[in-house]
Image (tube, rainbow, N blue to C red; front, side):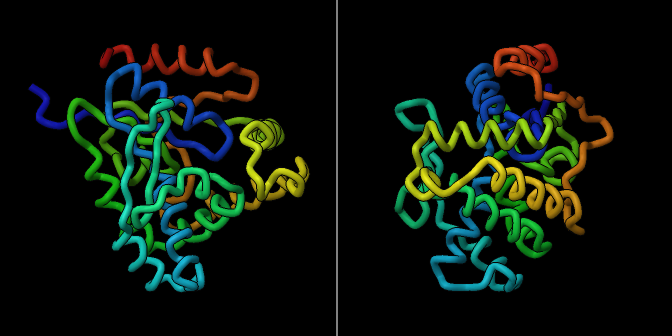
Length: 230
């Protein structure tokens, strides 16, 4: 008998479809879901609300260790996230929040502070772990490791469409496709080049390029990979 809850780690940069795939997998298998990126976005938001610089590693790490957060399922099936009792699900999905998260994620002390919190999500019947270092650092013993990639230009177009559909007020009129492409390139450089847990596929990860694939095709590929746990 397996004494340890199984984990499917799904890694990759922003805009490759990780979030959609992970929510689908969690629903399909009836497993728990860890959105690790949300923890870094929450850390950045909490740091900014305390008027602390994102570059102050020790103080940001303290914020990360003391995060008062709650994850609950929304009526629409999505994930609702509260920080200090206030729902911030939309606030942490902005481009500004994503860029701030990328900055704090490069700090080794912050990553260390959030490591055990992420591992605590590993509970029965199983966990779908969405992030950038799930298969390399957080759950190196994951039963299945998936790594998604996509062309940066396509990723920028997807994000632009997403922002337009959500009609986020801070991005509605002042975010261009070219600006998103620059931000994605900068974020990729930080994630790949950081000393602590750089963005890279695990040696045993199964890699999929989603550039020309539909969501249904990506989910079907993942379904085949996860067949032993269905």
